[in-house]
Image (cartoon, rainbow, N blue to C red; front, side, top):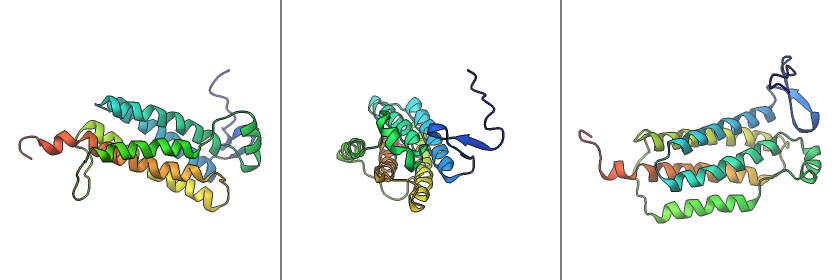
Length: 184
């Protein structure tokens, strides 16, 4: 089977369970933003200098696949989605991000003023992922406000993820802040 199904040539795309919606539908906007976030987290993982950062980001990418699947399912199809055994976002997954936040904060990363992305490739990639996460959060919030999303853990997860990405970016640039390059 080819990836080029041509079924989207008319401006529609598939959701789970053979549902079709316009490619401009808010649900597709949310799924697309999560997909973009997953790709950005992948870039951040590839650019990470520390094993700890890489090891935190791969599970996040796996969680985001579950979020995309859940968002690609209409509310009336969620019981079938759960029955079919697909992963869903849970408070336990939010708890893993809370652990990451607590660990990085325990490292006493100090920061004054606004962060300026770009101290190094790793922190810049994390900051890019964070900004994409905030956009994805806004797209999902739109679905929630329209009553088209039933799992509040998704919003909490995205909010916590952006916090974790910000902290990981600051942690990744800690050497640059302690020992700035000559001329800075």
